[in-house]
Length: 320
Ligand SMILES: Nc1ncnc2c1ncn2[C@@H]1O[C@H](COP(=O)(O)OP(=O)(O)O)[C@@H](O)[C@H]1O
Ligand SMILES: [Mg+2]
Image 1 (cartoon, helix red, strand yellow):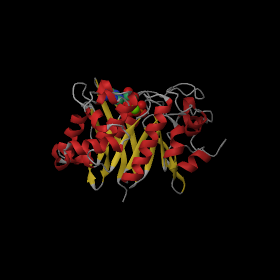
Image 2 (cartoon, rainbow, N blue to C red; image 1 turned 90 degrees about the vertical axis):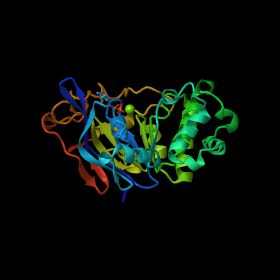
Image 3 (tube, rainbow, N blue to C red; image 1 turned 30 degrees about the horizontal axis):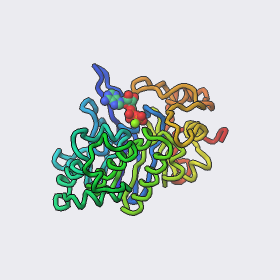
Image 4 (cartoon, rainbow, N blue to C red; image 1 turned 120 degrees about the vertical axis):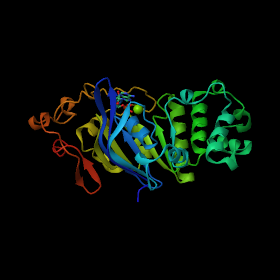
């Protein structure tokens, strides 16, 4: 049984009298100890999908359909009390902007200790805080524990955030664009750290990125999202050898240099349509170099085209 199984997840946001469908029928799994990358341009629904796992969605969001099973729990049906245990013990998050997730007027060590108090009260000690900071490669961890967030560099702050996420010993770590705000050398170091921790702690990792270059070094499997839907899901090696969906191909052709923070893909014209403005037919058709007449009217289904490879494009074999 996979650690995480999301099935047919559909999420809408209330916006005035309209309901915007930001995530539409998403299914994906993450096995024990596996790293799965969720990729796609900004606005594809990656963050909304990830937040649903810990039921951290904004108040105007509603899970319309779907199931999210995490280590035997059906997340969509948990009571607030049960949810608190799931967040932390089962899933923890690292976000793009560590500074925004930390309390500016509280010492780093105290913030980590707060997490320990909630999830592992017996371990809520200064020694455990030091151990966690050391685990994420922070030098002089006892001293750094006494620092306030503004005293740390961006890279150090992200390490502290990772320590905080690990404090509850989650089975699944969700890292949502964890390096996008950092410069190139630091990006590489943080990614290396995540890879190392995943192996040492035996966690599963759901790594969200718009950067397909990261995927090649990291992921066992890749889930490509576009306009709220999964358009391809396959093993990393297969995706890199021969991306099947025209969008995956475009993403791969546009791999930015590691260190580039640009979310724009120069080789694909246009941008992801926002929720509520998806075109008829295939959502990618206005930007697709292989567009066929039927793509404008018929919405393609996600099909298993090879064992373990799912593609939402009936013409995927053309021009590959
Ligand atoms: N609280 C919200 N209210 C309304 N729309 C939202 C909200 N949060 C996200 N969205 C919309 O959901 C879509 C997907 O967003 P998101 O998951 O953040 O994309 P990604 O993480 O792939 O960049 C976007 O169109 C975004 O505008
Ligand atoms: Mg996002």
